Image 1: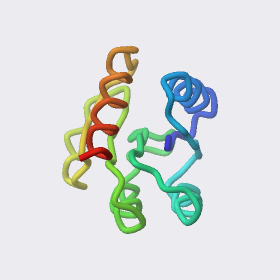
Image 2: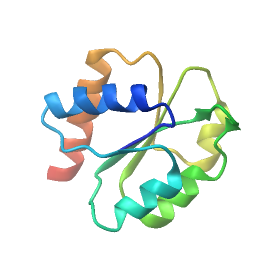
Image 3: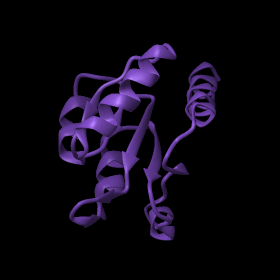
Image 4: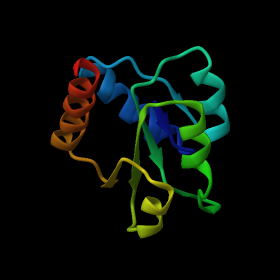
Length: 113
């Protein structure tokens, strides 16, 4: 699942993940993600940390309360506070194809284990 208020960004990443074989949903915010998680089992959530309103504080704990999925922060600028909310991973944009492939591999390995 991709959580990013930028529709272009989330649709592009969703298309890439789908091309790599992942079933992907994408939403604009954590509240919408929680609603989808009621009917979709996400194995990983990529959340854009920096919204146009500022740091998306509280989004990670909200998602963690709704799922056991791996939660990874994806952002354009460094935000050490992302780890204060115990994200499972942290990636800087722009994401290279190799990074997205590594994310897919890590998540699929976790599912198989």
